[in-house]
Image 1 (spheres, rainbow, N blue to C red):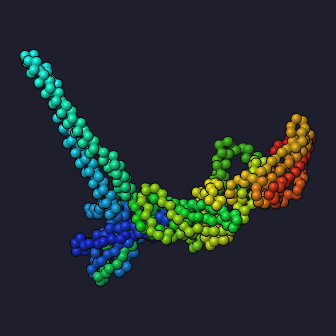
Image 2: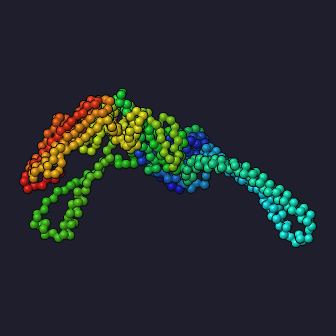
Image 3: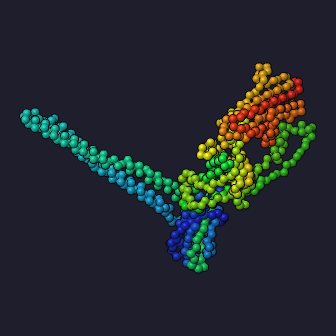
Length: 546
C-alpha cells in the first residue's frame, strides 16, 4: 500500500457502485474532463455513489498506473474523509472493456469462426479428391498383377474398358471435388480482409494499459447520501497539443482569415472517450519564478604581485572568478496577452475522443478575420522577382498563438507552407505570401576598371555603381519596397559615402546599419530605375576588408 498527500489536480469518473459487503463499495472510473497544457494535462473523473449512514470504504478503480500520485485531489460532498490511499495490489479486478471493445471482439471471433468453418468445408470437399486419386492409383496397378497374361483377348479388352471407364469416373469426381472446394474458398479472401479490419479495430480500441491503480477512500456519512466523488490528477510529458493555421488572403477585400485548428495526441495509457476538452497555454510544468541573480564581485590586482603567482595558482584564481561570473538564466517570457491572468484558454464546444497512442486528432476552432494591407518587397541582390508582403493587425480579442504548421493561401491557391510567429491582440506584423512573378527585378554593377567589372578601384579608394530596374508586368499597380545594402564604418579613418537616385525612403531599416529602402508606387506596365553609387576612402598603407 502507498499513502500519499493529496494536491490539486482534476479527473473524472462515472461509476456504477455496488455494495460488496457492509461497508465497502466498488466504483469504476472513466475520464470525463481533460485540461491540456503545453507539457502536462489535468484529468478529472467523477464517481456517483449511494451510501447509507455510517463509516464506509469506497474503492475507485480505473486510474492509470503511472499517474503523479502527489497531484491527486478528491472532492466528495456530503462525506467526511478519514483517510485515502492509492494502491495497485487489490485483488479486485474490474474489467476495463467498453461496449465498443466488446462488439469489436465479438466481430473478430465471429469472423474467425466463419473462416474456420469455410476451411473445414473445403477440406471435406477435397476428401473426394483423395478417394478418386486412390482409385486411379489402384486401377493403374491392375495391369501389373500376376496372371494378367493368362487372360484372353476379350477378357483383356473388357478389363481395359473397365479401367478406362473407372479412371475417367475417378478423374471426374476429382475435378468436381476441386470445383466444389474452390467455390467454397472463394469467400475466404473477403473474410480474411474483414478479419484484418476487425482485428485492427479491436487493437485501436484496446491500446490502453490494463495496469490500473485503485483509490481507497475511507469516509463517514452522517446520513444516507447520494453524491459524486470527483478525482483529479496530473499527467506529465505524455500529452501534446499544437495550433495550426490555414491563412487565406483576400486581396480584393483586404482581409486575412485565420482558419484555426489544433492537433491533439496523448499516450497516457488510458483512452479519453467523449470528454470535455480544454486547451490552455499556461505551463505549470515550467519555471514559475524568476531566476536567481548572484552578486558579481569586481577585483583588481597588482601586476607585480600577479606575476609571482604560479600557473596553478593563477588557474585556480581564474576558475574562482568564473564561478562568480556565471551567466544569469533568463526566465521564460510569458505572453503579454491572455483571456485570463494565467493565460489563454480554449474550450472545445463538442465532446472529444482521443485514444492513447491512437495518432493525432485535429479539432477545429472558430476562424478569425483581420484587416490586411498587401504590398510587394524585393531584395535585388538575391531575388529576381518581388514577393507579396501582408501586414496585419490582430483586431480580435484573442492571442494568435505561434504555430509551426501553417499553410498560406491566396483565395483557394496554396502558395506556401511554414510557420507563424504568433501575434497578441492589437499587435501588428508582416509576413510573406509568395512570389509575384510579374514584378521582375534586375540588378547590374556598372563601370569597368582593372579588369573587374563594376568596381572603380585605386589603392585607397573604391567606387561601386549599381543600377536596379523593377518592372511591373502585372495587371495592377503595386506599392513596392526595394531593399539594398551599403557598407558602413565605425572607424574615423574609413570614410563611406553614397548617393542614390531617387532619394532613399528609409535609412538603417529596422535599425540595421547600411540597409536602405525605397518605397515606390509602380503602375502596371511601368518600369522604375534606381541608381546607387558607393564610395569608400581609407589611408594609404591600409587594406580594406568588407
